[in-house]
Length: 92
Image (tube, rainbow, N blue to C red; front, top):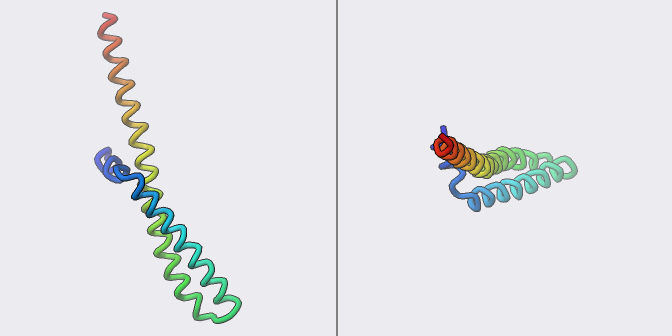
């Protein structure tokens, strides 16, 4: 499980780029859906298709950002555990 988390979080800038692209696609899909509601109904179909793609891209980016943060927490916990173990052994 750690290997997956570290692999997903290994490129935080790329994950942020995916998230922002998904956010931009989401905004485009909202505009198309709103235009379809006001003007032509057929504009809603591309809006819904783009919405599904946008949610996938933004979700993947957010998962990478979360994995990066979580891997930092795991690394800090492991180093704190090693430090405490070394201090305990030195105390004996």
